[in-house]
Amino acid sequence: DAKTTQPTSMDCAEGRAANLPCNHSTISGNEYVYWYRQIHSQGPQYIIHGLKNNETNEMASLIITEDRKSSTLILPHATLRDTAVYYCIVRPGGATNKLIFGTGTLLAVQP
Amino acid sequence: DSGVTQTPKHLITATGQRVTLRCSPRSGDLSVYWYQQSLDQGLQFLIQYYNGEERAKGNILERFSAQQFPDLHSELNLSSLELGDSALYFCASSALAGGASYEQYFGPGTRLTVT
Image (cartoon, rainbow over all chains, first blue to last red):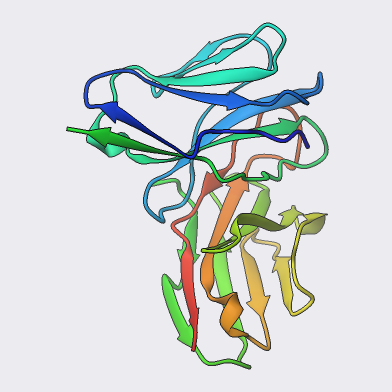
């Protein structure tokens, strides 16, 4: 599975957009980019995923660069409840959906 | 609420003992995953079952075993417990075993403390 690199931590002001970057320079053609988050020892929560195109859902937007070597998760209007560790995971569309978690980015939303 | 349930929420036991963690997947999901989260190792994939059969294995110790029953619930058995087994254990489920775009839904976890 391709390795991902994320900043250890980021701050964001409440109400502002939070932009969380992820590098996955070794990603291959059949690998998807997934984002999950974990709020203080709760079970990880699925946010969004994509292959090539940008994606948007009710929680966030995912922007994937044309060469697919990096992506950005955007939370359009961050709230205090968005404070969490955000994990960027690259996963092939194969026989198993197992997730390999890295260390993630701790996003702290400040009032 | 993800729809995945795990019992018990907390478990405190002594070294050398054996415990069983239980997971019920979301209604309709056929695949179950187990993950371990400890302070020094982060979130690690342990094992996956699909419709009763083992599908993938991660860094699961030989002292640990799992199974998925015909009603699709799963149990993770941890034996000869050591202090280092203290961790949060998460179960997750998904509709299918693999494929392109099936997200996993995680339960609230079981916190195991070995004293």
